Amino acid sequence: MTADVPIASVRLEALGDYAVALREGATVPVGTVEFVRKAMSLARIADPPNMTYPDCLLPYLYRRVARRRAGSVLGRWFVKPVETKVFTGAVFDTLGNPDDLSFYDPAQYNAFLSLSPEIEVRIGEPVTWRSEVRYYVIDGEIRGEGRYDDGPDDAPVPDGQTVSEMVSLADLLRFRELRNALPKHRESSIRRNTI
Image 1 (spheres, rainbow, N blue to C red):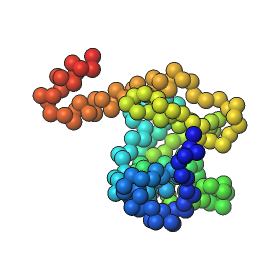
Image 2: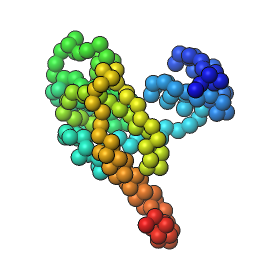
Image 3: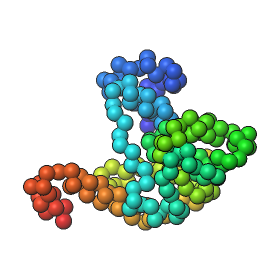
Image 4: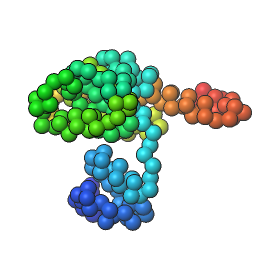
């Protein structure tokens, strides 16, 4: 499928060597969030707005999620930045011993500790994931999906009907936000065209 497409493995530190190609759209970065964000910066592309946890999808989380100031997070929580990927979400105990963190979590914990105590983060009750799947959605249509974890191949995946309901709700929210952003004289024509 990619036999005729040249692929180069590039370290984050060397990404600057591809700045011109990125700005010209001659290359597509694929990698971690940090890698793609740096590539976007080099290409002079602004980060998209953060869309994490729209209110209409909160019931599908099956746990309580709240916003808190970083300095007031006490105890064992799943902690995630409000801003897009300032650090990756992780479970840690702010009152526990940092030496007890897993291999992956110390970097996340240290990034969390480096935040100003006034910065807002999201917290949630810790859960155990059986699998993680990413869905790629364009204009309310699921265009692709892929497992995002390294668990067993036979791990359960989300129910397709539930995912479709969530996509429909999120698309409706996107449409309402678009409609609310337009001048009022255009609203009736949008409403008429979408019924």
